[in-house]
Every structure is written in structure tokens, then in C-alpha cells.
Length: 295
Image (tube, rainbow, N blue to C red):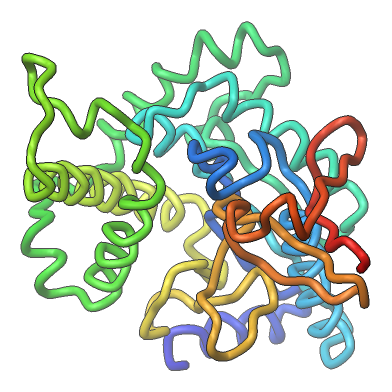
């Protein structure tokens, strides 16, 4: 790709690791039980982090200086839009970074890092500052005069991301009553619900445009990876969980992992694996995966 080649050549000429950045791993889906097993990382995140480490290892095999991959968590960028608490967002990130300690090529950045603040592990400080950070982020990095409708129409990457958001928001928010009622508490039409879903998707796209700006400002010389479908001009799409070619590509924070009796894995919604055929497995006190029952 013409966009990535100059960056790679610069790393090689200066004999430093290939540096990549991936905005991802925000929080678990709010559709717990339907899509995911719980609010904390599980086998899906473990597999995803292992694959990212494997990517860095593969680069090391052909380039002696190897690679480094920075995961920039976008949790508090989006969680208020999706009505997910700051507490749950922090808890997810804490466990994710603990899992990540066994993967030496992976680094983790919070929004506080990107804003130039000192990140904190103290829960009270984090919760007190989360909304302030969001407001500062939106004010400083939302593109001036940003026209969401024009962006969706003219930018193919944005259009693909928007369509993807609309599709998964229908499942993500299916049990959220606020989207199904009018201001008087009356049930609204399916068409009106879909308008609400599209409005959420547009808000996420606008936040995403701001997040793109802050990534450019802080990691502009990194190779930008993306978990979203892309034409591969400005960002390079990757798959975090191995899938068959005919299967839907899922992220670990919007799915559950089922392990079959022969050890193979499959990603899907938690509800796709009923208790009649699968049992819930725990690790370190948290739901971890679904194990196929033997006959």
C-alpha cells in the first residue's frame, strides 16, 4: 500500500521496530447473556492479544528489529454513547492490561495518555476524571465544521464503518428501552427505533473522527491498524479472532468463544451456544468460554 510503504521504509532505514497502533478493546457489549458472557475480558481477548503478539513475532522473523504494537483503548470515547458505565469500562481495561503483561510486544495507552495527562490506576480518580477527559477530547479533536452526512457519503471507509455500526447496534441495543420509547414513555414504531439507531451510529462516527485526529496527533508515524472493514488506504484492516471465510468477522468484546470437544474454537454470540450443548467455564473467577459437552 502506498500509504504504508514510506512508514515501513523509514523504520527500516533508522533500524527501529516497526511501530503499529490499533484503536480497540473498549469494553464488553452491554448485551450480556445475548452476545457476551460478562463484563470482563475472556478467552476472546486472550486469543486476540495472542494473535497481535504473533503478528509482531512474524515481523521479527523477517526483520531483526521486530515490531511493537500499541493498543489505544477507546473505551471512554464511546461508552457514554452506548450507555455503558465508566466503572465497567475501567474494570474491562484493568483486566485486559493484566492479560497483556504476557505479550512483550504489546503496549497499552489510555485516553489520558493521548491527552497528555498522567493516567491513573486509582478508581476514584479515574471515575472523577472520565467525563472531563471526554469533554476535553471532543472539544480539542472533533474536526472543525465536521459534516457527518457528507463524510458518510464521500469517504468509503466512513461509509463502511457507519453501515457496520447500524447493523451491530440493532443487536447491541435490542434490550435498551430508552431507544424504544418516546418522551412520554410510549412505545414508538420500528421505523422510529431504526432512526434512533442511525443517530447513535452517526454519533459514534463523529467520535471516531475525533479519535482518528488524536491518533494522528500522537501516533502519526505509526502504521494504523483497524478492526473495521476498510479499503486499506489510510488504515490496515485486521481480524482479531480466526474465522472461516464464510463466517461473520467478530471482535472479542462483541462475542463469546465456544470450545468444541476436539479443541477447535468458534466465535459467536453467547446465545448461539445453548446450555443444552455447552457449559460455562470460569477462569480466575470470571466467565471465560463455553465448552461443548461430550456426548
